[in-house]
Image 1 (cartoon, rainbow over the protein chains, first blue to last red):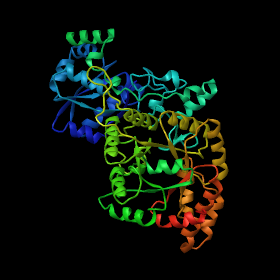
Image 2 (cartoon, rainbow over the protein chains, first blue to last red; image 1 turned 90 degrees about the vertical axis):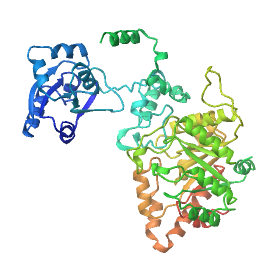
Image 3 (tube, rainbow over the protein chains, first blue to last red; image 1 turned 30 degrees about the vertical axis):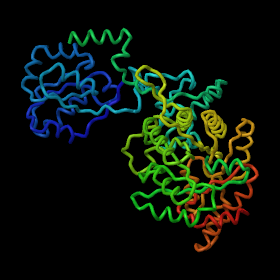
Length: 229
Length: 300
């Protein structure tokens, strides 16, 4: 699940300055889990805009905006296309993926109502306490299954550092030291030898794979989707 | 050959000092202070690298000026601000300027400093940086050419590679394991975080010996300016514990005597630990003029 936060209303108003009529598009997926979107939030946003003297031509909640075909088909529903036509801009209550998907499916300027924030990682499809930082170079086999990229403030691959403070991180007394957690887990598993491993510096190229390295079937399917859209 | 290395190899108890570059271009005062208080009193002087993530002039420029003043420098290098390209480049630059002693440090987090919106880099950590130094010394670097072959350096550097450790951390075992990793990565000497408890240091050194770590270790001494500073260190500086007895002594004395008492405390710590280690790293934090008093109190 991608985590979002509401943009300050001032920022959204600044982006929609000069737009008399808006269409509100919401995502029914991650923003509902993050408590930043869904029916109630869309209604509240509509009220805020109307309070500021703007007109809202329509409000539409789609299950997952990241499914462009779904967004496109929902825009074709009776009455919808006409509502969008009347608006000068579409305000999108979703993560950055959804905003881009909407922009690709409708010929109108857009404005995001949310900021997609990095909690240094993403949870699964469901809100979860385990997070993945999408590093492309997974070393969980050597850290007792605890990820140092997102549990360590510095994302060190060889920890602890000198800032480990009684199991907490120098950055905040409330934040656990990721490598201390790893040390305790490895100790518990009888695998302290893993702590002695000299882990190589990360290959950051794996976070954003260049075309020449996109070998898996996934990439072939993405190319197919690109062509079709 | 590094003069610091020579002195450590001689078996003498070695002292090192430390200075911090200015937030600005006014480098002269700190160099003059080093000339007045540290030159010919300590074997080498560390120059800090954007310490505590507070922007300052570079460690490299400080080291160049120390060298010009006839003082052996130790270049501190943190991994927080520069990626592996910049770090290797700066290592080559240091070598070209005749600087050999390099202390590899992971570095305090951005959020501890005064530029909290900056991007933390940490492309390498201290272990990776030590390995990078060793790699450069072997005639290559971390990259590969267009054919995937190792690069060849045009002129090969030589370093005396240092690292740090926190002997009085609550969890000592991972510290010692990490130190072992740093030695495996190429560390040739170690300067520790501040120690105020000789017993805790003794326990740490026992683990170090059991681990088979043989590099020279210089005990970190941070001069306490007052009881308030001691309290701050206890509360906010990871792995540093100032015993109540020391805070009491600082509180009890007159303000004008504080520096003397503080130097006395440092001297006592050195006396009690000098048989356990190979030297002491004096972090006097602008109170460098008291270094002679510390050395005297330590019996040197």
